[in-house]
Length: 328
Image 1 (cartoon, rainbow, N blue to C red):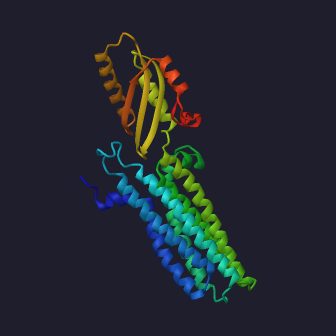
Image 2 (cartoon, helix red, strand yellow):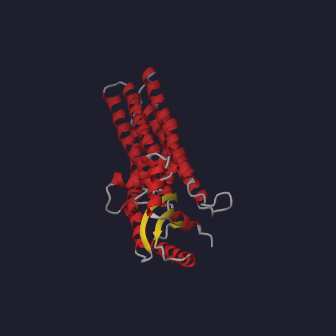
Image 3 (tube, rainbow, N blue to C red):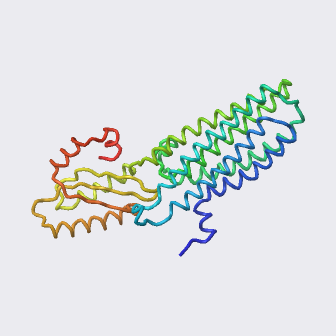
């Protein structure tokens, strides 16, 4: 049965919360920029537009990624979300950072007369409150998934880009609001509108840094990353526990979606195991593995002599770094 709208919003609460905040903030920022001529406020307006577009793209990616597997894509469409996450990183860099730096440079070259900053301060305060609410939601939801891991380690290991992208975006947005506020205050305090332009450039540099970090994480997911080491260890333990298994040669995994894993297992079966018994044993192991790790969408267990598996791994043309990412 299809999910109700309420259920879908609950599943993607981080994205919907960020989208709602950015749409309202963006309108307020553009109004303030038009009334006061502030470069950093205009930059913040473009920042909110880019962030809103990013949330729409991620929601689109979430929807497309949930399509069932078909003949053309036997492992499903889960990694389409990783593609849109990479697009988001490019947009932050090209549009968010690019426009911010350009506007700041233009404002330094052609400074506009200063007007009352009151409207800017009001908008900044409202924006900070809304962005803070979105950031709080993102932090709360990400905290649930990271467990005892440190924040950076959890981000690096996360296979769901939507959560950490919003976390990065909202953190950058809050930092941008602080810089914009300082820039506006300093411009009036020192009667120099060029400071406001410098603040805009600083915001652009923060966005560029965030974009590079997001692109790095998204690229790894798009290319294909292994499952968490704990998951791989569980797979190895379950297979090795069967008396008919002499040794588990290797366990290779790859995420085909945030909650979907393909596992290829090479195991040395006892020589006394017949073909029929082997088939029954493999089916039993697959059932046990799926019960223990529901994320295992596809499992391939290959009977293989230990010495042959070692030789095959040694002769593999794949680079050592690729082997290290998928083998225990």
